[in-house]
Length: 412
Ligand SMILES: Cc1cc2nc3c(=O)[nH]c(=O)nc-3n(C[C@H](O)[C@H](O)[C@H](O)COP(=O)(O)OP(=O)(O)OC[C@H]3O[C@@H](n4cnc5c(N)ncnc54)[C@H](O)[C@@H]3O)c2cc1C
Image (cartoon, rainbow, N blue to C red; front, side, top):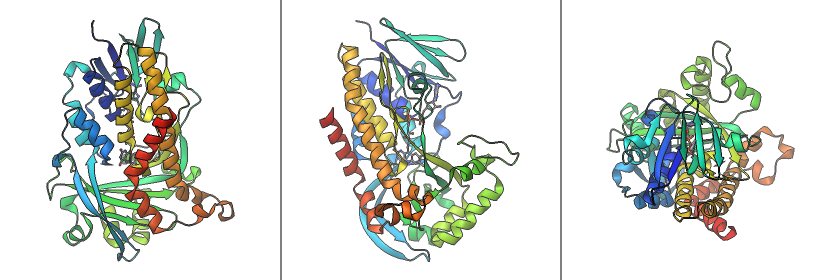
């Protein structure tokens, strides 16, 4: 029997995980990515979980020390820069680029097509057709929508499902290790560092460098700072110097200079000086935080996966792990001959998992979201957050993910 063909829309980590795992169970796979150029330039730190590492190993990708920077200590700094709580942890902080390379390299070049933007999908009992904006059409047996939070595939099948703004943004910054002043580097660089300004959450940790290096001296420092931001303020943040509003995703170079100067001044006022110094030396940008839930993830021969299906707030630090678990569930479910039954099995497994993860992210972010409500409308948990709550949530992260996974498997 000729190999069945899967068309994967979206060539980021979710699409690549799906492509590699589907190939491992005998499918012929082609990935279509709308960007005309290779995506390697996207730099971002990513926390990893044992579930992701297991799936990479299943693909023959060894999670060795070149994959990330290992951390063994959490540290909480107060406003003056004094450490008031330290604890042990075991975490590996990887990067988007490092994972991308290890998943992209094993794919034959003809299986990954850049500059192909999906317009819509057609399907009947014999197969599925992807229609692209350049007018070309490609046929297959299965189409996987791994096209992210603004998924074209999801918009066609679930036009009413849209991302919910959580009421806060993540200010992000990355600085090369060599640009971190040596005294600050010695004090905080190799620790998972937290600052807790009232109503906010600031965290920072080392990640692989610009070219995925993990050697001392060539790594980078990654900062994520969650700040409540009312919807009208967000509109202002997303408006460039020429008065043009960029929706919720303004390109970082277009963020107005006074906004960047303002956030740097706020960092000096609210954050421990060592961490603020790193933030100020970097080029900060922001990402509004959204979550999204789909009531259905299979539509005939079409399946949604990764952020296209569900987006949990990033506190869970598990977007890529979720995409990997979705992709593994999908590949296992469609390995047999009955495609329709396999896809329904995928939906039964991953729908409750996605919901559970979104719930976990909301629970962790509730305190920050609630800052936009008057105090009298907040619950006890929304009024006060203890440092121990934050520490416990971080220490139990993989366990929480595992619990959601087990509960969803039981429910399916
Ligand atoms: C502040 C922040 C911190 C985070 N930290 C972590 C972390 O520590 N750990 C972690 O695991 N996750 C983290 N995440 C989440 C993680 O980045 C995402 O969950 C993950 O990248 C999802 O991958 P994806 O492939 O599903 O979607 P995406 O990465 O969004 O990829 C979708 C791809 O589809 C392409 N595409 C879109 N439309 C079309 C079309 N019509 N035709 C063809 N191609 C198309 C896009 O160009 C893109 O390449 C974080 C997210 C944020 C915002």
